[in-house]
Structure formats: structure tokens, C-alpha cells
Amino acid sequence: MGTLGVLGLELVQMDTPPTTAYLQIYTEKRCMANCRFCAQAKGSSADMTHIARGMYVPADLEAVVMRLKTAYERGYLARACIQTALYDTWWEDTVYLIKSIRRESRIPISLSVFPLSTERFEELKKIGVDELVIPLDACTPELFDKIKGKSAGGPYSWKRHVDGLKRASCIFGKVGTHLMLGLGENDEDAVKIISELQSDNVNIALFSYTYIPGSQGNFRDKTESSVIKHYRTVQLARYLILEGFAAFSDMRFENGFLVDFGVKYDVILEAIEKGEAFQTSGCPDCNRPMANETFSKIYNFPKKPDDEEIVSIKMDMGLADRIPQS
Ligand code: SF4
View 1: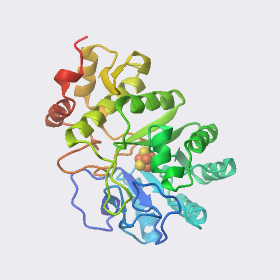
View 2 (view 1 turned 60 degrees about the vertical axis):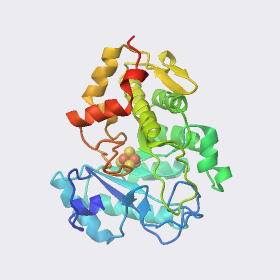
View 3 (view 1 turned 180 degrees about the vertical axis):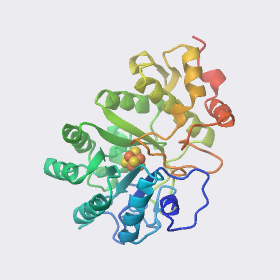
View 4 (view 1 turned 135 degrees about the horizontal axis):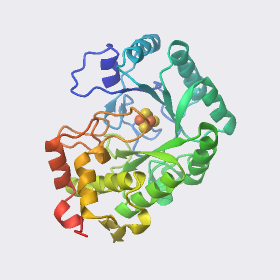
């Protein structure tokens, strides 16, 4: 909906517009996969115009493509991100959309997709995809199986997703993945996989799990305060690892909770006050405003958090009892 607002196809009041155009290929067929958190899944009865909290209202393809060209030229949008479901003609439709955008514009294109053959990865690169993202969503193989693998009645496996990431990285140079927090993983699970993916040169975008009415199962069984504490802790750990300030091996965990980031308190404080750790992560220029937030709780800040927001981040983290004064 925010993308349609920027493109001038809907009247939307926004204090922070998206800097990427978020495009979901619309089909009335439900996805053949069965990710239990997803509104589009075959076993879901949720409204098909949603992904997480984001509303994806169908719009005319030609109008979107032409306005995307203008929005990119005028600097309103810096990237187009395409997501697709798994249905009979998904490949043809995806290629058609990418080629339609490329015919009009040089806007960088991200594609979030399940693992494909190496030939298809090559084809996607050739037609203009520059960021290829294969979402793991879960932080462990067990959780993956439960929410989008065999146990969920879906076609995916952790092994094939990891293999897809490796093969795609040989073609694209780098690849990305999405990790959704709040599915039952603990701090240690999340930080461990982030550290492993980071050393394999995988760009990690963090999402917060959002329950969609009609989707299959509500995984959020914790209180709001423990959910946000976990999210902030993992965001900060990710940032410290990515920026080279800390290593997973130096961090300390107790019963899965991170109790020591393995760096001095002033480094942690400076990182928190800089705010970057808590901004939306993922492809360049992806800010995903309100993708999984509510007005009372922002998980990914779409722009640099202001002073008031930094104070609330510190409160979210329970700073006093979580960060040792080492
Ligand atoms: S990180 Fe952002 S731009 Fe990249 S695939 Fe994910 S949602 Fe799209």
C-alpha cells in the first residue's frame, strides 16, 4: 500500500515512505507451499492481500511499471523488490514482470524466491535481478521443518535452502536471506545462525513474526516485553558481528539468553546510541516501513531512530540487567 502511495496510485498518508517498491505477484491461487505463518499458504484462510502486516492491493501492472520508472528517475524509489508465491505459472509471471520493469528502467531489482535450479538463477541474473534472496525464515533446521518444511506439509527443506543460497552466491556474488524472529528460537539460536551466514557472505534481513488471522497457528507465546527484548538483543548482536566489533565465540549465553555481548560496555552503548543496529536490515535501500510493526511498537526503524526512540530501545533491552559493565 505504501508503494502504491509513492507511485501515486493510492492516497496514503505516510510519515516515512518506502524507499523500495514492494511488489507481490498477485494470483487468486493459493501458494502450493504451506508456510504456517503466511497468509498466502495453501492451508491458510487468511486474506490474500496481506503478507505479515503489509497490505498488497492488486494494481495494474503497466501503470506500476511506468510509474516505477518515473519514481526511480526522480529519486523517490531506489529499488524494486519482487516476491512470488509457488503456483503453476509463477516462473513465467516472474520473468514477465522483471523484463517489463527492465524494459523501462535500470532500477535495481531484488527477488525473494525459494531455491531454484542453477540455470534459472543464471537466467534471473541475465534478465536483471541484482539481489537474490532465499528466505530461511527460521533460525534452526528444526524450526524450519515445523513452520515451512515437511512437518508443516510444505515442499521445502533447510538443506535445499542452504544449498540454494550457496549455488546462488556463486552466480550473484552475494545473496540474501530473511530471518523471522519470534517463532520459538532463543537468542543463541538466532545469533549463531547470523554469525554462520555472515561468514558465508549472506546478507541477513531481520523480520519480527506477526500473526495473521486465518494463518495456521500463532507462534507468539511470549509476552510483548520478552519478544521485543529478544528482538533488540539479536539486532544488536547482528550489528556488532557485522561491523566486526564482536564475535559469536566471545558472546556468553545462559539457557539460550544472551548475557554478555563479549565487548566493553562503552562499545555497546555507542552502538545503541548510533541507532543503526535497529534500522531495517536487508538489501540496499530496503526500509520496509510498517511491514511488521504497530504504531506502539517499532521492530525495524525505517530511518535513523531519534533520541526518544533510542531511549525506548534502551528500555526494550532492559539495559541495566542485560549488559554487564565489563
Ligand atoms: S531485504 Fe528488503 S528488498 Fe531485499 S528481498 Fe527482503 S524485503 Fe525485498
